[in-house]
Image 1 (cartoon, rainbow, N blue to C red):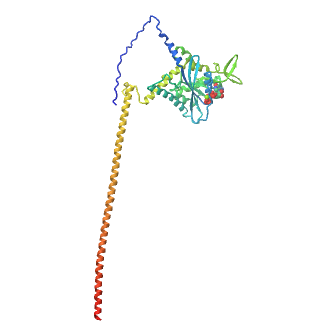
Image 2 (cartoon, rainbow, N blue to C red):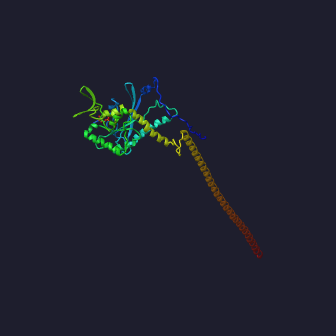
Image 3 (cartoon, rainbow, N blue to C red):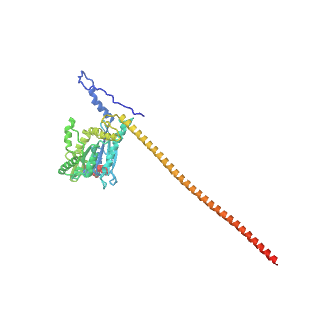
Length: 421
Ligand code: GTP
Ligand code: MG
């Protein structure tokens, strides 16, 4: 099939714009409300990835964050490799529906060799991007009803050692920072003292920075949230405490952990950063994380994948090319390659036939030579036998002659004797 040449049509666009005044109410000021209504109707999707060693309190924190019981069971901690498990839940708050997917690492940090602990996580994130890309590339797409499983945020649970990050933390976060919005959090922060915590936080931030790990920053460009987000950015990594127990304090029942020496209240801002995390993750920046996932991380994945498939917006001379042109080019290149392969195969076939023919000829020659030799041997043998026969015949004649002669002389002798008598 011949390649179709598609020349981009030059379209002149009028760019000058005039601002006009309306002389009465038109109604498009309701557009934001229309958007809100539509979004509420469709419901929202949010996917959280929790990475952290076994027993660091991932499940407990999720229960605390969404004020529910996700009924998760403790994971095994003797697996040979890291695995990921995901569960999707439908939550509703007033009229807003949220389809929440919680994805958890299983066996993270349990292996003796932790070199590629990040691999399962990277593969999982990529698999979700790939699924979305495949849906996008379909001819019959159904993106509005497609369950988007791309991960919007990664809560990275840091062990409360007080000594800084482990190498597994740095390696993993570095591998993920171009794929997902990372929010590092210090798990089980009630096990660390107040002065130690400040030092621990700055040590973590310094280590992240010196290793070039880019973590998610709450956006400060939107005026309505810029102040709170700026303050919150300075509190990262949030030191959190989770609990499934409730304690009565005064006349209120609160989520807390009770110790012989006192009570840690999960939602008390002077006890831990749990409320800050919830505010930032759910109330203020959920939409920003969803948007950044699509516009930044997915976009990067998509660009790389399409380039890998051989698609590009520009050709070798930096001139724009359309998708169709690339497709046609790919197609003709593929056909040419196919033709080349076919020619090669044909040549190889001819060569093989020639070789076989030569082999056969050689065999025939050998056979002929053998036959000739046999024939020669046979004639020689025949000649020899003939000679032998002749000799025997001659001998027989000679013998008979001698016999006769002998007989004759005998007869004469006998006759002579009788005459004498
Ligand atoms: P796996 O799913 O098995 O990897 O564990 P997980 O990370 O989900 O931990 P989980 O929430 O099951 O908690 C493990 C243990 O830690 C439980 O006994 C919790 O009560 C306890 N725990 C959870 N959060 C905290 C916390 O903030 N502080 C303290 N001190 N203990 C906690
Ligand atoms: Mg768990």
